[in-house]
Image 1 (cartoon, one colour):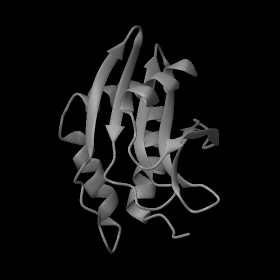
Image 2 (image 1 turned 90 degrees about the horizontal axis):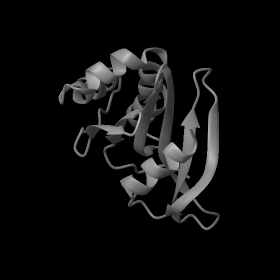
Image 3 (image 1 turned 30 degrees about the vertical axis):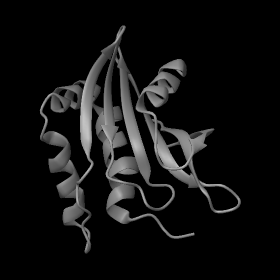
Image 4 (image 1 turned 60 degrees about the vertical axis):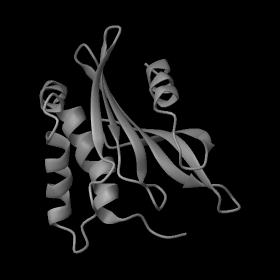
Amino acid sequence: MSRPRDQHYQFAHRVLPHLALSSPAKFLLAAEDPGWIGLIWERVGDDNPRPISPRGLSTELREVGQDKVVLITMPPARFPPEAILAAAVVRGDQVRYFVLELGEDLDGNPTMMHCEWSTHGEHSNFGEFGSGREPDPEAFLKACLALL
């Protein structure tokens, strides 16, 4: 199994959860600007010898009932556990940060894993979320909201 690319991993598993979980109001405000996510991606890439293209990176700010959601589509994941999708879900003054990670089954076939990062840096894995690399963003978001 290959190692995840540093920029991809750091962006989805370190930088975004830190930003979302430490200051949900600022994170939501930033998400209103369509260019904000690309700037963060580039900044994370500045420290990497082989920066990755932001092609495929996008965000969508949604309101679902009482929740505000920032749904992030990542550049294509190549190596586990690079993220395919991420969602910061804000309900009142609480926020949770979920990722749909690329994984592998025992035969080396690609799968997707539904996970979460906590404010304490803990990683929870809720299990397999389908095979392959093509996510269903609506199903992912629904699964995230079901955990609230």
